[in-house]
Image (cartoon, rainbow, N blue to C red):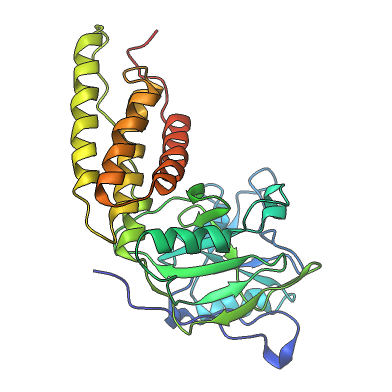
Amino acid sequence: MARPPHTPPPPPPGGGGAPAPPPAARGWHVFPLRPGSKVPALHGEKTCTRTGPCQAGHVKWEQRATTDPDRIRTAWSRAPFNVGIATGPSGLLVIDLDTPEHKGSTDAPDGAATFAALCERAGHAVPTTHRTRTPSGGQHLYFTAPQGTRYANTAGTVAASVDTRAWGGYVVAAGSITPAGPYEALCGSVAVPVPSWLQSILRPAPRASHAPSVAVTGQSRRYADVALASEARNVAAAQHGQREATLFRAARAVGRFVAWGDLPRHVVEQALQEAGEAAGLSVSECRSTLRSALNWSIAHNPVRRDAA
């Protein structure tokens, strides 16, 4: 069951100064950022005195983020802090659409363009949800995560120049001001649930159980062959609106066998390319999806424990 939509925090009172943090009733856990900055205003672990909330050990910003109106009023009465929203405790998944300059490039498409292309390939319009503009020209799209789901932060997993913020991450709230400019609300009065097709892309690829220390190379390769054949069938049978996500998920799942040396990359690419085309995707769509998904899977799957 998905969380009910949250309304965004209100704009700064009087049109300037520190933004007003969202009230506890809206369910967004906030903490202060240094005035004019994106850096948390709370002390770090190295300078922690182990007193107050940290008496039993250092408490980080994610744990100290709160919806308690008394704590919020007390904190923001001390200085014109910017507002950080701890996305995980707030039940939020925020899509961060970067500009290419922010990623060190000037000729690559920006995150908004690559995310729009991903939505189109998935057969859906770009979701209408609470959206903010960052000082650099990027955008944040706010979604509510399914109840009980713990999404992690990602960088480039969804698409090029598209990151996500969830557990372990935070975003700067609309109304906050930095030297580069303000964070501004653009549209959408509520954060809508994460679309199902996007959930399938964000779902972690399953990890194979680690084999005993005795080498069973032949069995491992046979298992990899069976897994590839199964994923290829799933891709070929994918329905319109799920084809891109199914291909992406299959490549992430099978990519670990490439990383472990059980399957050559070109064999995986050929099998899934053919399956994607059979499902109705274009050659270029398949190649783009396979490249990004396999690169991610290979980079994030460690060497198998039974290897030397």
